[in-house]
Length: 215
Image (cartoon, rainbow, N blue to C red; front, side, top):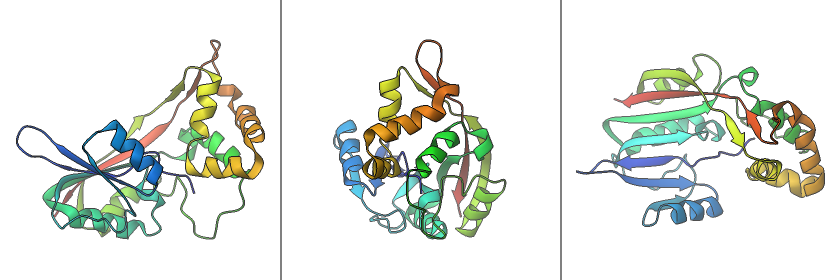
């Protein structure tokens, strides 16, 4: 399993602006979001069991998050529950593995970890053609748009690159499993193709996103 990089968020649209609410399974990431957006409501919880009332939001977003739910359909039905009629959900997930340089590094991290339990979701479980639209339809949405967008990862130097890859949950577990030095060595061993002459790194990736309307 690959940890979500961004928490799902929900948006209400009062006159003159937007009120943003977020949720993340990690208390540390939720606390970081509160620091970044003072006064915002950021809950700790599971996207399959949202702590919000029915029809509370105009928009629900999930960036690199819905594919990690134990029951992806249940997570989307929760998003539908908290949306107002004609509200929108926006989902973004990894593109296909062959479209993403990040898969090379993810593979290196997997090799450092014990095998996942059978049926555990991975980062690319919703990346195939039709997967997003099918999931959204089953959860009670009309899909308005599915599109791919270039999403490069760029890092100015090696320390920043290594720190970024050490941040997601599975990478934290990998560091605990093998130690920081072995982790860094494994990451750098597969990252030579992404290192530029000035010492920076660039990984080209495609993310697939969908916009759908609650009905």
